[in-house]
Image 1 (spheres, rainbow, N blue to C red):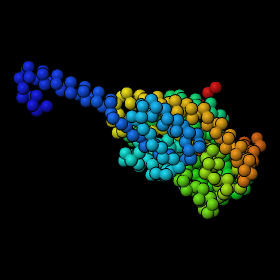
Image 2 (tube, protein in one colour):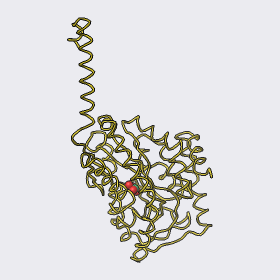
Image 3 (cartoon, protein in one colour):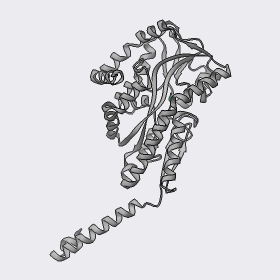
Image 4 (spheres, helix red, strand yellow):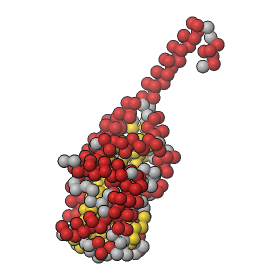
Length: 341
Ligand code: SIN
């Protein structure tokens, strides 16, 4: 720039032309970046809705980019556990993550805990109305405050309670130590039932159950089965009391470093992978349930309508507690989005 300022009019114009040409050349070179490597870390097994969707993302993206963009998947917390993975994203040690929606609260986004509200969703369609609507979009946009780009939502499924005994009525929870994710809504739900919530990383949960550090937990069956929790939990109650899903995020600096064409390629491959993941999630959970039944390792209980209603009423205080923390408009918007038919 300093050189251009000292030139005459003609020289300045030529200088600018050269500079613009150089920038354009630089940009097109950037578009043709020799290679892009995406390290995608997650904490669940490969044979889960998240594991399978991430595999699909890798295959599609690597094919479409003819191997120029590669995706290295690190499942089962091989690289980072729940607490470490966000820090790894911030430091650029990984490029992509898909944390459960419940874990965004601890990162400074308590509004994401609307997804944890007990008995909010009756079906996957209810979830879809929230994630695909304005509210879902608003939540993803908020992630920019912490240098993250939210690229989309992915289902696992509905959670069920497990323990060393059937957990059918609110009274069954008295004093039971339940492993929970780092969500204050989930903690409030357990407290409302008289249980003691214990926050543990997902990767530590099976061991903690085996050692008796905690007595029970809540999971979609796909996570329960693939973590081998059937070996350490005698009873699973199909309570379907709340939802577990994910937001796929990428670090902003990495995203900004990509050429627009590559961002589009990644978005497209990811959208297809998320549609695929969302289309198989329910079936994967059914498959896991069938395998669990066949193993006969864990007794499986159904809730009667009366038991379900009693649990719903007992956990209702979790709504007020969240509304006091984040504002009732978020909770009402979630209820509206979920129940608009
Ligand atoms: C996950 O599905 O990513 C883990 C959920 C959990 O921590 O329970």
